Each structure stands twice: as structure tokens, then as C-alpha cells.
Image 1 (cartoon, helix red, strand yellow):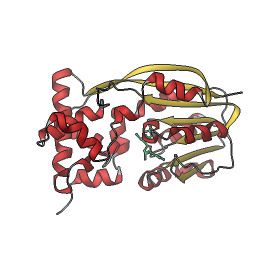
Image 2 (image 1 turned 90 degrees about the vertical axis):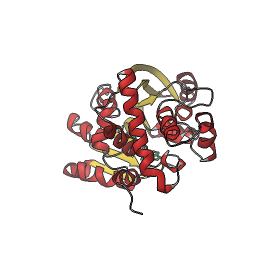
Image 3 (image 1 turned 135 degrees about the vertical axis):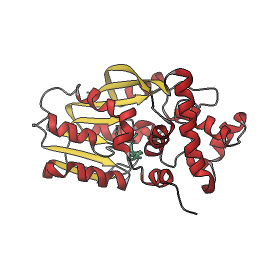
Length: 281
Ligand SMILES: C[S@@+](CC[C@H](N)C(=O)[O-])C[C@H]1O[C@@H](n2cnc3c(N)ncnc32)[C@H](O)[C@@H]1O
């Protein structure tokens, strides 16, 4: 059987430059606007296709090194292409943040946008590593998403996926056990609450301050959300359905989002925090 275009997109997480305009790209400027002084080394964790590094290199001539760590080989390749013109100022490493590599340089700015939930529940090792990578007056700028969750720990994207699974024939009440049976941890559980996360961060950093904004996602049609989901979540949820029904699953996700857009004037809305964290002295 031939895979649909969306299935292929999900396997390679392709189309993120376009898809991220709906939500994640807003974090980039929000974070970089909080960088002060003349940074020399910036480390972006879960650097994706290199958008934040690209913007930082343009904004800060003082940067002698911009380093990206990213797990996906497809994303590293896209970032390398985007950042090629910056030559030796850029280093990209394919790495798993739950087992981070030793790096020679300390950073005066570390950024991590829309990534931490993917490390749940093993964030400690990464946070400890970051705290040791920062210069004494360095700063760690972190964005985290906080969707509402139900009694089963589902919320945010899980709700859109739940509607899609129901449209494909699942019983609504059975969806939480479909998630656990399929090894899919709800994203609203992965994201932790603000209070829970604050307590965790305090163990490794001094929490200087945080800002909060609402991330509102709106779309113009079903297909726009179908592609946003594939580029952002890849096969994470799609593996809940057998391979022959995956194309139908992605279509149903797009339709579920589009229904929300009609009913509520938006697909989703959730608070995002930007944490400003300093090393403990
Ligand atoms: C939603 S994207 C965010 C990308 C970028 N930071 C941005 O704000 O647009 C999450 C990124 O984290 C990466 N990622 C997830 N888990 C990871 C891990 N354990 N180690 C390294 N990268 C990871 C994914 O491959 C993906 O590129």
C-alpha cells in the first residue's frame, strides 16, 4: 500500500517551517527579546530546523558560537542548510537530550522552546546538565506549554486526537486506555502543571521570573491543521491506529480541528510560560 503525503510528512517531520507559523515560531522572538548584553555562546536545545539559531546569529554579532542539539536527523539536515552561510559560528549535534553529550564550551545563553514536555518524566538529567553548561552569569530561557487536562491527564492536542479517534469508530470513554495501551503518554500529562514544573526547576536553578501569554491557534481549513499536526507530532499519536488507517487518522485530525475552529473561533488556546532561570550560586 502506498503511504499518503501526510504519512510521509509525519515520518520525516517535514514542513515545520510552514507549520510552526501557527504556534511555535512566536516563542522564538519572545525568547530572544529577553536576551540582554552581548552574548558570546548560545546553546539551543531541541533546535529543530534552526530557526532560533538563525534569528539569534542575525541579531547578535557578538555571538562567536551558536550551538544546536537536536534528535531528528531530518531536522538537523534542514538546519544545516538554513545556517550554512554562518560557517564556523554554527555547530549542530545530533543528540538525545535525555543523555546529553559533553560539550567543550560553556554558554551564556541557553534556550529551549516547545521541547521540555518531550523529555517527561526524565527531565532532571537534562536540567542538571544545563545548569552545569551555563556560565556563572548565564541565563536559561525556557518556554513551556500548559493545556488544561481532564481526570485522565488528557488535554490540548490529546483532545483533538480523541475526537479524531472517535470519528474513526473508537468509543470516547475508551480513548484514555487506548493511549496507555498504545504507549502514548498524553501531552497534557507530559507538560506538567506550572506549579509542578516550578518546583522541579527550583531544584536546579534560581527562578528569576516568568512571563505568560496565551498561544491561540487558528486555521483556514482542515488541511492546514492536518499538516501542522504531522509536522509537529509526527507519528506520535498516529501509531494508535493500524498502518492502513493512518491516512484516515491524519484527515480526521484536520477535520476535528476545523470543527473546533467553526464552533469556537479557534482550534486551541493554552497558556505558555517563558521562564528566566539563572544558575544557583
Ligand atoms: C515542537 S519542536 C520545537 C523545535 C524548536 N525548538 C521550535 O521552537 O520551533 C520539538 C523539537 O524537539 C526535538 N526533540 C524532542 N525530543 C528530543 C530529545 N530527547 N532530544 C533532542 N531533541 C528532541 C524534536 O525533534 C523537535 O525538533
